Image (cartoon, rainbow, N blue to C red):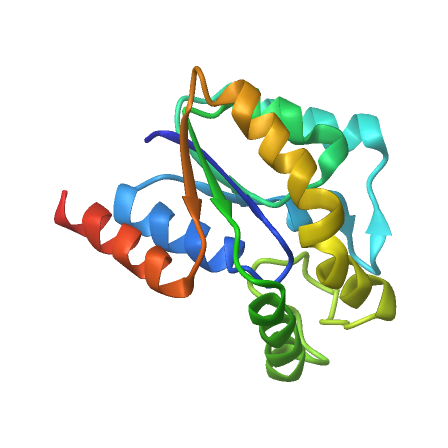
Length: 170
C-alpha cells in the first residue's frame, strides 16, 4: 500500500482516513478538494486539475482522497490500493451537518485556505443521491479495475476502525 486512492460519498470520512493512513504508513496525503478549489471557491480548469493530479500520481508514494468523477479513472489506474467508503446515506448526511457546524466560518484542514465551510442544498442533494446515482457507477469501475488492484470496501465506521487497527499492527 504505497499508492492509495480513497473514494466515497461526501461525509463518509475520506479526508480523516487519508490523514490517518498517511501518518500510519508515512505517505504524503493529497486532498482533491485542495487541488480543485482555489481561494474564494473558484474551481480549477479541467486541464489544470488533471495536471495537478498527474504530477502527484507519477511519484511512488501517495494517498489521495476525493471523488471528482471526471478524473477518477486516472487515480484508480495509478493506485495500487483503492478504498471505497461505502457508508449509509444517513451517516454521511449526519457527518456533513456536524462538519458544517464544527468548521463554519473557518477553513477545514483538508480544504484550500480561504474557503470557509459551506453546506449548500446542492451538496446535500449530492450526498442524499450518492448511493442511488453514483454508487452503481463506482461499483462498476471497481469491478473492472479490481482485477489488477487491491480493493477495500468499508461499509461502517466500525469497519474503518478495524481496518486501521490492522494497519497499526504492521
